Length: 105
Image 1 (cartoon, helix red, strand yellow):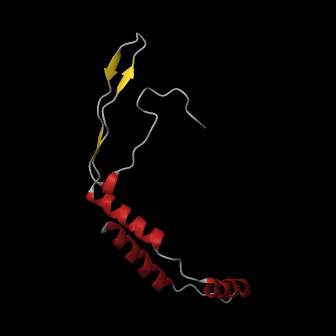
Image 2 (cartoon, one colour):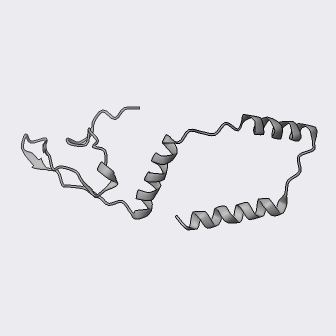
Image 3 (tube, rainbow, N blue to C red):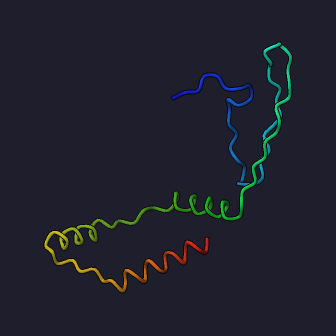
């Protein structure tokens, strides 16, 4: 869905350079009476966590996905045969480690 009637100066976007502080440029926009007025500047500051998340996202985007098709096929077969066993202690340890990793972000 497109937005047809944006206020002057809001129709284009500028990417954040190097995930650093970014200030939008001030532009002038036409007013209904024909005069022009300056549009105020907006400022965005990214937190260290946001910068780290962006770095992780870029790293994941460039890392090739592992081929787990054989492992997946073996899991599917075990589930279908009813022989798959859940190791509850291992599962609980993995969940706990995952939660600790999330807290560290």
